[in-house]
Every structure is written in C-alpha cells, then in structure tokens.
Image: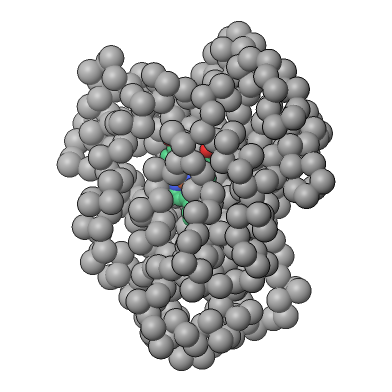
Length: 368
Ligand code: HEM
C-alpha cells in the first residue's frame, strides 16, 4: 500500500471512512499540518466533552486549548525532571528483577514490562499503585475496545474509572500534597486554567498513556533482541549503546501503530489526493517507520543505525509528552535485564505469541 498508494482512502475497522497515510514524508507532513485538526466538534457541532471526558485533553485539542492543557502537565515531564527520576526508576527495576531471580519461566510482560511504567506513572501522579490492576483493566478495555469480561461493557469500565477518579480527586482536595495531581486540582479550583472535565481528561490520558505504551516498548525490544542474538551480544558488550537500540526498537516495532485521528478543516489537494473538509486522516506510524525511501534496509533491526528520525512518538505539536520518560524507562529496563541475566530465552516459539487486539497498540499479550 505504501508503495502503490501512500495516501489511501479506506474503511477503518471502527466504521469510519477516511485517509490512511503510510509513507514517511506524507505522514510527517500530516502530523505537522495545522489544517488537520483534532477537535472535530468544530466541524460537526456539539462538543467533544459531550461525548466523553476521556477526549477533554491535549491529544484531542487544537491551539489555543492544546497549549494551555499541555502546559499544565509539561513541567512534570521535562527531560530535566525525568532524568531526576533515574535513581528511583533503577531502584524499582532492581526490585522487580530481584523477584524474577531463580524463577525459571516467567511472563516478562506481567512481571516486569507492565509493572515498571505503571508504578512510575502512579508515583508521578500520586495515585496509589496498589490499584494498578484496576487501571490496567479499565485502560486495556478502552484501548482494545473490548472489556475482556463476560457481561461487562467497555462503557461500564469507563464509568468505574470515572467514579474512581472522582473519589480520588476528593481525597486529594482534602489532603493536598506536592505531587502532580495536587497541582492539577489546584489549577482546577482556580477555575480559569482547567475545567473539571478537563481535569478528568488530562489525568485519564496520563494514566492510559502510561499503561499502554512503555510496557510494549520493553516487550518489543526484548523480542527483537531474542530474534537478533548478535545484536543482543553487542549490547551486552557495549551497554552504552542501549539508548540507540531503544530508538531502533521504537522504529522497528513501535508500541503505537497509528496516530490518533485528525480531521481536514478545509478542502485541499494533498499529495495528489482531493481531501474534503471533515475527512478523517490517520497516519500509520509503523508503516512510515519502515519506509525504504527514508530508512536503509528498514526490515533489519539495526541498533547501530546512526540517523533514526522515526515517528514512533509522533511529530509536531502533539509529539509525545511522555517521550523522555518512556526512553529512560526503556533504557534502564533493557540495560538492567541484560546485565542481570546472562541467558534469556523465549520459552515458546515466537509464532505462538499472541499480539494484542485493536488498531492502536502493538505489543504481545504475554512474553514467556
Ligand atoms: C502523544 C507514542 C509513552 C503521554 C503520543 C503520540 C504518540 C505517542 C505517537 C502522538 C499521537 C498523535 O499525534 O496522534 C508513545 C509511545 C510511548 C509513549 C510510543 C512509549 C514508548 C507515553 C508516556 C506518557 C505519554 C509514558 C505519559 C505518561 C502522552 C501524551 C500525549 C502523547 C500526554 C499527547 C501529547 C499532545 O497531544 O500534545 N504518544 N507514547 N506517552 N503521549 Fe505518548
């Protein structure tokens, strides 16, 4: 598709119709082009918030709201703030790896790749990490579009999530602390910087993004290293190259398959196609990251790749806010795993691994 029709009109699995962009240059152009907007209520009337509080956040907003909402969370995610967390992330990693010692076969997703980023995001926000199984259930349900529980709908999970947040916000209001959530609630109470719905939207976005992405970065990187033992050996010899390997893993098997939807705000000619006002446009990030016009030998996992301007974190104003955190967690997780365990092997055949359903995340369900 990328070769034959890189900007292609499709029927998406969720019933929408629109444009799927698979080439690198085209994809990057969409992500940077302000004519493709996120808040479709501007085109169709109503408001995004009427649909769900889960869309009242920066990822579904355009300027100027986008800047205001991103600004409220930005301070907690600057590279400086994040590098200050190195020691704590290393400590958590070591504790989790202690638990794997001598166990034989383990599910690396369940016992390592999943808990690490969750505990970290819970600590940043100030949410009790004991409740992480609930967050996992709710956020998986929303991302995969199925609750995974008989007789329970995704909407029920969304409601449980909202109720949980409401109770938690109340507790924080009564006992504020120095954490991000207390600062956000303070901004909400001041009234003009963050509405109540936006508070729910922002916090749920951070929880969901923290749950669905870095887990797959760790899992997909381990998988690539299992399939490429010589590269694994190289990293064992030269651990300083792990950050570069993380970038290659993001390119090779990025945890987020597709960008979120954008809507054309006007009729336009785009790369030879007539795109109409109101059309949906989605960028296939992983397809773009395998575009041979941009990357030499794109199907090769090559942690020594010098230039790696992948789109795994998106591009433009919605570039991933959590990128410095995800990169640091990925680096510490992989370096520590390699330095602690001299012999790591898949306990099943790679072909037996099940990939998570849905269009958004790319990662295995279990990694034995
Ligand atoms: C946005 C990927 C980790 C928070 C994005 C986007 C991508 C992405 C592709 C842009 C989507 C679009 O433009 O349609 C990833 C990947 C991650 C990761 C691959 C891990 C390897 C995280 C983490 C957090 C986070 C750990 C925070 C806890 C966000 C937020 C946005 C975002 C808040 C919206 C930014 C905006 O709209 O301005 N991420 N993400 N992400 N990500 Fe991440």
